[in-house]
Image 1: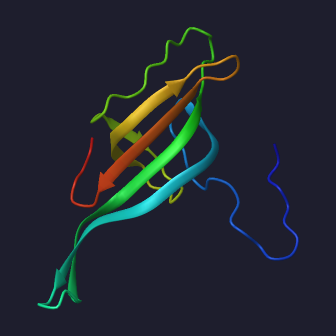
Image 2: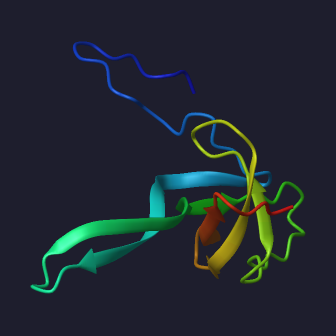
Length: 124
């Protein structure tokens, strides 16, 4: 399929460099910055400082499962397993699987995953 043409104001279209070997994104992909935030308050309860720690990224998406020869018996990645994908930003990254499930039905099998990559961690 050819890339769509935009007229007027240009908007970001598509998934960028998103790739996950053996899978095709279904529709919406969520990539969010995450961190733990602790508030420090004074004696009146007013916030006087914030401590931001453990930054990272959480990635959630649904993928169609490719099965070129019709023999695949898909299973979702285990919670805690390392999943390597290239997010829309374009650099292959190892993520830790937070949750994964496969939906089977009359049509396509779909893998739903939520992955996390803390800045301080390296998953391989």
